[in-house]
Amino acid sequence: MSDSGHFKFSKTNVIVPLMGMILIWLVYWMELQMGINLNEYGIMPRTFLGLKGVLFSPFIHGSLEHLYNNTIPLGILLMALFYFYRDLAWRMLLYGVLLSGFLTWCIGRTSYHIGASGLIYVLASFIFFKGVFSAYFRLIALSLIVVFIYGSLLWYIFPVKEGISWEGHLAGFITGLLLAVIFKVKIPVQHKYDWESEDYNEDDDPFLKHFDENGNFIEYMEKEESLSDDTIVQYHFKPSKKDE
Image (cartoon, rainbow, N blue to C red):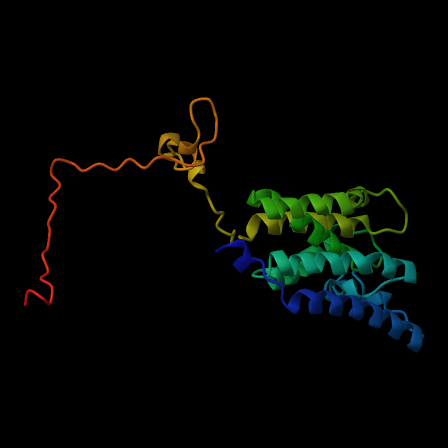
């Protein structure tokens, strides 16, 4: 499959990221309008009831700043996922949320862990490592872009700042790496030119024949046409109408 057949823009590339961003803002708006706090639906590590946060925590945010900081990265990374890895995007999202949430439940501090940042780390980690593992130039370029834009996220998988769930970030980073190793992607067939093949012979290249031994370009080449000794020439006589 060529690049044009593999990487196709579709409505899903826009709708899914847009719906994801709208959903987390809608949940926060409902909290403000109804005067409630949904933090208890976050992940509470090593408690049975805290497992519900594996599903609900990505939609819950503690402040407007927390929500804003997660909105743009979530939208951009989801768009990249559904454009470059559309065949496995939904599976990656499902397993990413479940596995990163469960790891957070296992290693987290005794506190409610909320926010979409864990999923963001899953996406950033997966896109980066999958591009490197694929060794395909477009996906490697995407990996470099992720590093350039979100490389600073790496620091927050360590306890460098109070009030941040570094355990959730670390769980997301590990999950993205594991899924990049496990999931296989279809790589477009890269077009190879004749000169890239192992049996390429410069002497048989019609273009290179236009250059002489000094490297000068010969625009017009004489066509050597000769008849071999085995050539048989046949003449056909067709009488004119006067001879009939």
